[in-house]
Length: 622
Image (tube, rainbow, N blue to C red; front, side, top):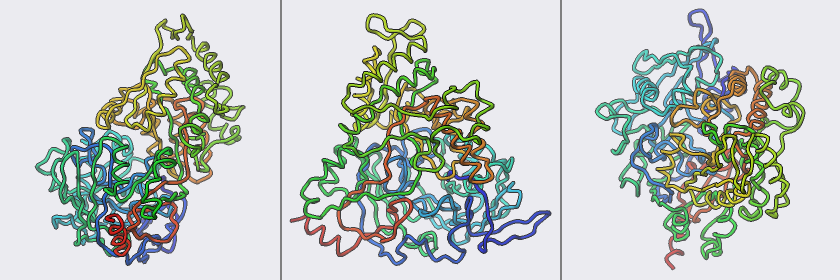
């Protein structure tokens, strides 16, 4: 959970005096607000508590997998052991309340901002100075092999993830001093300081893995056995790289627990893997998959005219959400000399013709993104406020002077594709950087011809990258588009072996330590980090820390807007586009709660409607 904790007491909290300070014991914690649900809440308000169990869900996914451990660098893991059944555009899940195989001490609510409710944990203790957090494990919590979930499993998981997991764990958990098992049902995390208030939610949101299951296995290698977990599903059967079937556990310990009731209603969930997104779409149209999240605007506009849609057998719906969009864009790898100069990076932004792309490629479906915190009050706009200027002042000499006096803007074209004005401005910027055109070739300040490669792993991205590369070639540079399979893409990005690629920076309402992973100096060389652009900027580090340690919403908002301005004006990323809806198509065989949810759609609360399914299946056979 990417949140900063500012705990406010309510009737759901009660202090217990211990040692020399009060300790709060509660069923939930939240940030900058109170948890919306009391200790006695029977279930999340957006579920249907009596939803029927049963039926099978078939899904098509693009890619491959060689194991079931998504927490390590090696291999390509089957992500649904911890992720949602349906991945939505922008990296968002479908509002999964709990992990499907591996669960955590706390779970989030799909309808609240940064709140954590006890799941594997029955109680959370937090002292007034916030220097530690303790969790009491529910005695009824069991792994799928019948073994109790214990505090030792929590401690072992944390230590193992830091030692053998992806580097992002170490980056985001840097302020956790240690973890202590106080008794079989109680675990305590000590912190090095109390400035980062999201730490209790972060450690509470980590997966809890079974220590005994991994005792004779090398955690750093891809897991090729069906995993043991405490979640509502187990891996029933699989063929690596091709298919995996999850079966609902009738003995799941939390089936009637408030955080589990009404969720995870399918008896079986089957994933078929395809190497090509077009084939996956055809599988859905043929009825081999029951539901599809569509993130290609061209498909949404043109590919759903098949008979089943016209006959009402397939439903199409855009679910509006109220989530921050973050930023999607072309990230330039500043570890490489080509993109070391911000003037060069700004020139790349001048050459991206969003208006043409939106008209000719996206069917007018998107709006331009102008902030790393888009669709949020944290997004900067206009010129800096007086409060922002105070935060930016120490870095004034290293920042563009215009940052302090002018709004950040992106080029706007007429959509014709003849953006000569942007071409001239880009060439002026490149000349200012010391580059020049000789014999119709762009030469850098070392006298070498300029060329680079855009790395993609999806045909839908390739169709956007190719026109962009052609536009860039008008500057006299050789720009190639390299398309690789998802497994190779993962290896290349983990090693930062690319020039430019499309990146998504998800954001939450309360940004936290993920900012270090996205933009921090400590992540710039950490293999597998999210710092795609290779950002290492003292101003960014300092402002990120102010965001993470802010005492209140107003202070955090000011710091986030100042950070946003620095990231934008340094042109680390060419901003792309965004949308405030999720596009979903499904064969009409499901029931779902008729309750709006902040996340737009929460697929873990859907179920197979037996009558609809029978009618739909019969119509398919005709």
